[in-house]
Length: 309
Image (cartoon, rainbow, N blue to C red; front, side, top):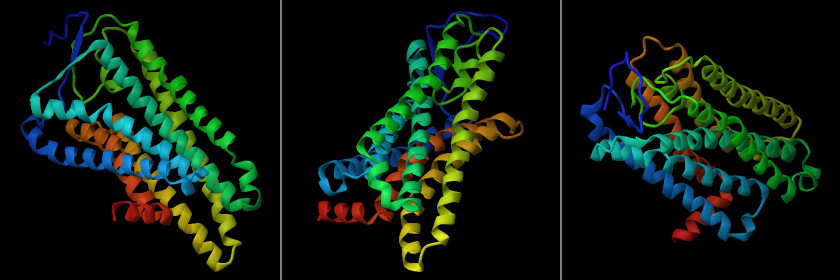
């Protein structure tokens, strides 16, 4: 239940409003959300299963695809089922500790996905700029270490966010104007000075969104320079292998960037627009990654056709 803003209390649960301002459209909005969620689950599971079962696809690039599919499945399943529960059954309540757990997994797996994209950019850089030493540099050990580093980085960056929130016992309200436990949406309800939490959130966002983007862009600038020195046929073949990765990166970073900009500076943007953008960035990558890699990658496309035929 909502409490007056001039009093503070210790909530045992939070209430998620879904998409505030569009409650009358929740049932209709649930249709595309459910369709996208179902497509994302089927697509990512299919791509991961085909790569695991097909021994000829046990190569560095496809191993990264599998990890990416697992991350996307986890990210979608920690948010969309609860969102659909709100839309269909008005199941708005979420336990305080479950809310913090959801917050951790949403932000941690988003950070891990960014780290995987960074590792894939390094993989493409070595494959194109130093192809003769590719098998020596990009070994199974390197893949395992880069994946472990992406996971550890995600945990290290995000774990302080819910831990810092645990020190707040009193809140002005237990109603979250969001569809999931987004960090700043919860922080704003705390009945205390939250400036430190805000600064930590900005620092994490900068390290993930800005630094990873800069490093990925740098790698692709170097890849582009290497492509210009190749023959037309080799350039076309190498360019094709990079297009899938670039498309997936754009599908991941553009919604996050738009959501972050609207959240920080869009004071005149309707609140439901911000919530919709925040949900789009959770669904865009899980939906597009299997489509991009499945359609653009010849080996996966052939296995999918063979599998279903």
